[in-house]
View 1 (cartoon, helix red, strand yellow):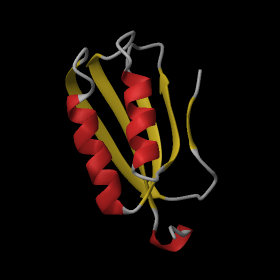
View 2 (cartoon, one colour; view 1 turned 45 degrees about the vertical axis):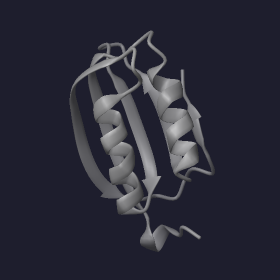
View 3 (tube, helix red, strand yellow; view 1 turned 180 degrees about the vertical axis):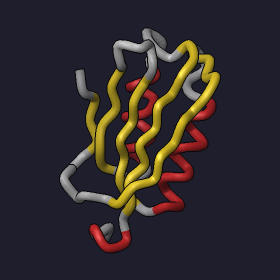
View 4 (tube, one colour; view 1 turned 120 degrees about the horizontal axis):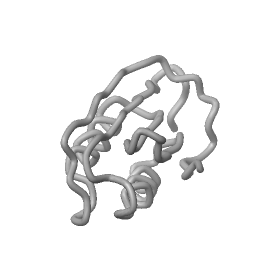
Length: 96
């Protein structure tokens, strides 16, 4: 079981053609499959923002997925920041 002690946080900003192409639901499906907690949302700057918590190897898998996105998206960059986990999330969701 993932605990706050062996969990970290990934904060990622995804740029490119990533809004209106199912990107948030791509992230939701993959983050849930990986057992991560956190959220994904569109920003007003036409980016997709992701906050996810889990083990470093699992978050690195998500980060790789973010670099490609769904087939309908074109990712130009992913800016990732690694932080301490807070343990505040019980699941992974889409925020609006």
